[in-house]
Figure 1 (cartoon, rainbow, N blue to C red):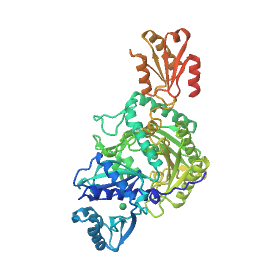
Figure 2: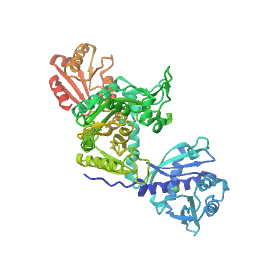
Figure 3: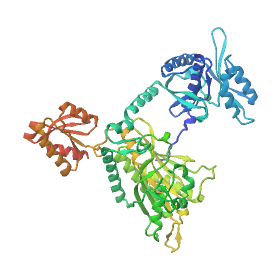
Figure 4: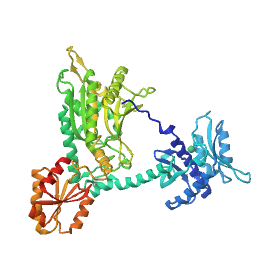
Length: 602
Ligand SMILES: [Zn+2]
Ligand SMILES: [Zn+2]
């Protein structure tokens, strides 16, 4: 498998279409809300928006009306024409004469501010929506814009206005708050409908809602933003993932290490994080000797200290230290989102110390492990992004030959393992090239998850060495890697991917036992112990005094893979009534047959 070509979104027709849809919305707004001031209206990842300063409040229920006017304006088949002004003066004249639509110059307030920011001597472009009506009268809607756009408004057919938000002019809270109107547009009706359907589906799968409903994790204002509390079922899910990865890592020669949550500032001065990472660190603390300590934002320097604690020979390498290391990063409280972007999270971290000759094989080993992990988690649709140096930047450390060798190692690993990848110049870390896994979920959304990075910088800073075959000291290369990315992020993704219905091996509760009446409770309790101790299954016994119907509904809500229903006949005949989450009622079967079924599925 070779590198796959990536068209940049910014170069695509869809991008131009969405940008044009933003202008079409602006045109509708100026007609519907006289005196409205337009600010900026760019295309964004899933659509477009326009920021406006409206004399009357625009509400969600007004969106239908705006959309309806956009439909009419689209059908008028207005030509979208690029115009240019040679300098700022000419542009200003054009704005005041042609964009204020006979209203006062104040409606152009934001456009004039934008114009001021254009560098001297630069041509200034506008896009004009033009048409001539039946009476021969010329109409236009001119907007200051870099473009590019589509050729006619009639190309903008499949769009929808989504929602409103507040947004400060230039993103600065000191400025006036504007109204941001979000919309989306697609090339075809089907694509628009799929997108809207997926949004609805995404709402239903939101890991923050499911996390609470399924008893996985919670947040508390008394604990603080971005600091999840893992509930019993969530903790079981985590343990299951950790156990799986630990076993895989042991097979592959990793050694576990455990390191503390805080360290002296000296460690981070040596690593350079104190400068490069300062804004992601929680405020520092001091002990009674006035020694400064830092809450751990990353595990690497600790593993390096362990490596450096003894003399290493080339025969010892590669050294692979793995730790499920909990780190804390000072994310802005506004940027914290559920467990996807938390302030406290656990990385499935490891650091490999390798010789130059081992780099390719070790990288292949890491990619192989990542593939194994994704396969087990049922995440089949993924690509790798190979982040390389931006040739124009000088922010990178290390010798060119090392960069070339490391980039080749990464590409070779992808090719050997049959992983689709694309090269993304400028996406390297400053200390070396890297590979990021991008997973497509069940709704077609991309998630950036696991990462592997080659690092020449930290071994240099810590003066790491090993004695080579030539009896001379050499510098090892470090590989940082985390196949999940973090447990939190991966569980967030899996929750949305499966809409909470985790595969049997991962499900926090694998089997729910539902006695029909009180007289079946004792047998059910015995069964629970057998499932748990003899067959090593995760079981929940629902012995509440509720009707069977209610118990079944509640178990379905919890998305438990199997329900085992116990009644008189089951006790007499040694059977169980089985309901599968996927296949529904399977009827009575012998206990052995049921266990056989579960074991084979596992
Ligand atoms: Zn524009
Ligand atoms: Zn690291």
